[in-house]
Image (cartoon, rainbow, N blue to C red; front, side, top):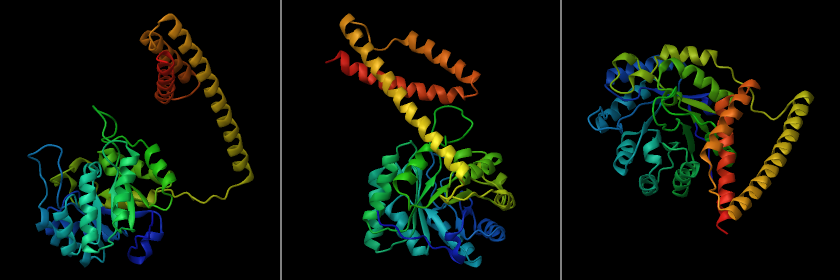
Length: 357
């Protein structure tokens, strides 16, 4: 993948954290102007706002569309900022480019649809514009779908790309609005190391009071920046009011962020501990291989005796026992449950292959 830097005013693209901020929706020119002026004081150089809002259910506020683009542009330019907005169709792209929008982003629902992403890519190619495009993760934790969207845009000549982690949809009530599943963006960074990676703590958290802690987690994991929803009066917001923070709250978050180096330099003590981790990982792999060998033997026995592969009662008892043991050892039972579920799934897969030979 061919990538070029996304250049920001005052060299902001070369400093961590990159901050893109603004309201969920552009609701009026006055709202945009008040918010932009306040954000300028925090050092924000990119103003974000949605003109078109894809809602989960019909009947909600879906944005003012093309009419909102001049509000975004005038607010951004009056404060010396770049302007960013979301696009989901070819018509959105044409309207945004005509209005002078500087940065586009593709939302989670659009990223999940290869046809829609290809339409956007083809439109940008036809326009001959290598405009910066940020791609949010799809609603499900499908890293190949996320990478596929980036590749479609890159193949269309878009080289100023970035990724935005906004969490993944989960069923039922959870602590987060969208589960972070941090391993997915970390794997994305491993596969495309030169790709700028931003975190959207607003959509992950869904609540303004945890935006700060999520922002710090993202910095601890080496993210390049943040895309945060900020509103001059969050309580009056027409969309996503609960997760938006004020510019003053954003300033407080930025001021308290602890930035740790991503550099590879380390002390002798740290190198020694890393070598110890490597040795433990080697042992873990040996133990997993040994466990799978025993599991294969069990599969052969089940084949000979005509026993079903999956034994639900045995599995439940095993999980309950191991989770209790995990808690006694200071391990997170949910973490151990997830690890054992993955091991069990692989064991079942291998045994099914054996009994059906």
